[in-house]
Length: 363
Image 1 (cartoon, rainbow, N blue to C red):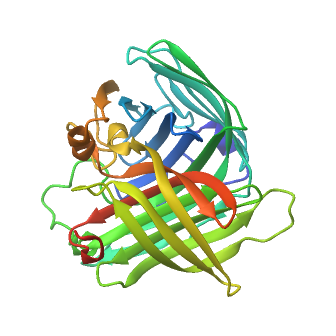
Image 2 (cartoon, rainbow, N blue to C red):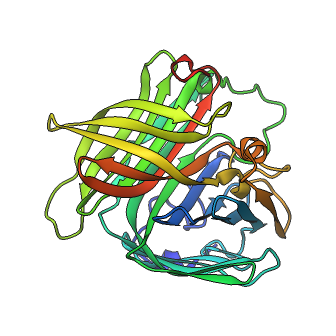
């Protein structure tokens, strides 16, 4: 089926651009963005999932106000024939300027949250090292991802109250990934289950931080034994600085968690870079976005990529000021942090997920 993209000189296979080379039903293309102020008052997460071999497109919008109430909306639609539109009902994602500016909107709806935001990258997008893994002869992970640090402007409305978003006191980060990934849709029937032992007894740790003239991002997967299974990241500099990013080759970490929980509270990291230097960064949590509200790791029978019919929405409010509720909805979270590096102060997020045993932190 022809789409508007087929007019452009960007084909990679002998087919139209509504198809991908691989027929695996877990092939996914994802867009994610996090926007927050620098006081911890509001954090927003939004994103899309494109599943060409499941004929599904889904998305979400979540807003946490003052770390008291988190408002969630999840949406899904039949992908075809509109494969070239990043739109699900009132939610849309527009590429205004590739690798620089993105506009995201959630128009008026029955869940009480809406927004119109424009992301502007402060630094070139970072291309992570691809991840490829097999089990029993079959690929279960083969992904590429880019991420970018920046600012946002526009507005957010929650329960009738409007909050202005400006580039001075708000920060934003986004990513775009594509490929085969686990946890997409309902499990296949009649086939041997994949061995998930790789995902046991490990920590998944992803960090972004923005300072005045530089920023950093890294993605670390570390087993409880201390073995690093994956590390990709870099120290980056702003557009026009004429400075190349510097790869991160090692991460030392010392994290603190809320009592009886895997939720991040504070910590320190030492980043070793390829030029032989180190950056020591401390952090403290300002607020948290619980991505389970967007369907990450699944919620109330919804998983990313699952078929929900031609059009579907759901949502709710969580009283996340209650630690019991926060622990129930804890999964893959964006902990908004204030960072310190020497005399500099910065802001960003850290995602920290521990699966199984991890004795270093008492799990």
